[in-house]
Image 1 (cartoon, rainbow, N blue to C red):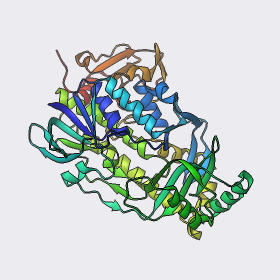
Image 2 (cartoon, rainbow, N blue to C red; image 1 turned 90 degrees about the horizontal axis):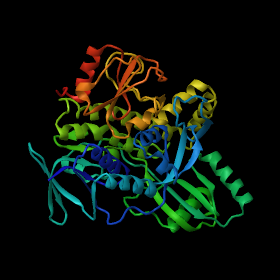
Image 3 (tube, rainbow, N blue to C red; image 1 turned 180 degrees about the horizontal axis):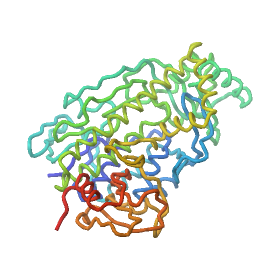
Image 4 (cartoon, rainbow, N blue to C red; image 1 turned 30 degrees about the horizontal axis):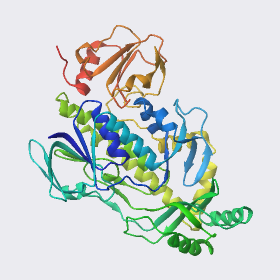
Length: 474
């Protein structure tokens, strides 16, 4: 019997498996595909996801396979330079092929002891007071204490649970890919510029070695899960631009719908949802993969605490309470961007206005922090502004703060040198550093890097340690 079975070995499922294994939870990851997804779609890792990778000691490994670019304000196809101070030691964007980031996360999970089985399709889910029985399409039945559906937008787990998925259906698809073209560069640039004045969602940009990245919006909605063909790309390009630009030799092709939906529940008993199984939205701003990885880091330590037996009564339910509003905000900003990108006079006027407004630092900063998820503040009750926010990677005694979070444990950072977390030493580390670059006497960090307590009173600290990490030992 496993402690947790995860359906889906995409970035969310792989990251969750690794988070659980940091706490020695017995994890099995099932994926219906016999091989990992192979099409090389480039995804962007935003600031908050980069910070989480740094917290787990994964950043250098991922950065070796990524292209680092400066962070920039990007909203509704309007790009502005990032503000000088983004309050992060990792204020940049990483472009990386999605199969590569999935492979790296899966390797990390397996190295920690997770099991991955491919070609396993979940067909039935039954749960009782003691656990969950997962039935596979081949008749195999597996038993675990918990099940997490990380199985994508068409989640079988979500459907088997009967969880509502309200929102708006797809109205059109966007075709994306990397390929070569047969039009001279100067002529191509003029054609693309003309198209983008009409529809800023359209792009055909050089990507090195003779390749071009193409984005073709407004294709007919398709229920197919397979990538589109080069013939579909050429036909839709002719519809949009009157030419197919001589497209040929594709490296990868894919399609994305613009459906916007949010699960009305993230948990039913011993079964939970994360990633695209819980929320889908248009790919504007490149937030989807980031949102799923952040779900996994929020859920991992809480579910591990439940399995290990020290979770406070409301801890696991805080996963939905914290992450569902974050997903709702992402859906709202992608709805806004979609409306602003429409090819009509009102939307074009709004884009011009927003372009001017983003020249104001306060507007640009607000939108950038929203897209990069560094502005998230969970509701932990009344307290200093830092409470509920993620802690930036500051210098502390012996190195950087995030280096102290690799094991996925809580952390008491104490400038007073007189506070203690001794009764929770099996779950919480303590670092005393009077010189730490911290605008508070002491902070208690959760394993996801969010500030759970700020202050200097031991009794108050003990209450918050109990709230987040259960009762003391000894």
